Length: 317
Image 1 (cartoon, rainbow, N blue to C red):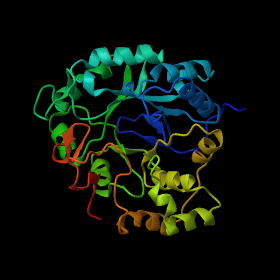
Image 2 (cartoon, rainbow, N blue to C red):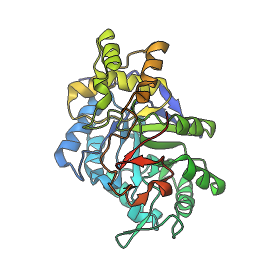
Image 3 (spheres, rainbow, N blue to C red):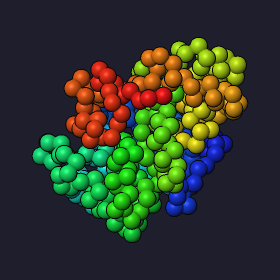
């Protein structure tokens, strides 16, 4: 099978670095993944993917790195992202070395702060406890002079916390990776990031197991018109709005579909843009929201997220 890269657009970060507009997400729904992760990455690279997104916290950096090394594809042709775990906010230099050792590579193309909250001795710290995410970011900035990372960015950051970060940052994040799909388009956050030169990366672009918008009649009609799968429509929408989707699939057929871009008309884009405005459609589709109104140890106020109902993010249309 061909090892040529898929014909997809490349976006340009604010530091001039090029990034493939579609990546492969390597979160398997649970920590680890073993051979399944290795096989998935190997299949993706064989079928044209050149952008891989993993994290120390996924517990599968070793498998991702092995697949890269055995692919026969030159390292400089693969865009590789990993992430700083919450437990390592106070030891960033050690964390990147651990990730590089796990991956078996000399550098990563992108290193993200996975969440703004730090964890020490098993406890999630408040936003004003040390290290704050601003202090952690300053340590990440130092990595840019080491040759170990090419770019740095953040994940799960709101406008509120980006404002706090950018007040003291010397380096503007190249991307902010957040859950994003037609049920949660984050229009305000996307515009804020674009105004600051930050590209939005969309994780869980299908909503993982809760693919609510796949059943929307307007969305289904657009897919039928293009003889495309709902996933292809979701990926095309994400790319055309200037975001970077990182879908995950272990199926070769589906991963090939996901990277086979279709083109949506402006009317179709607008129709999809408005899906979240329908009753009951504007929400997070993921399961990390807790009934007490927290996510990953912080309240929505601390995270800077909109008010919530029943532990699900609700945002004004």
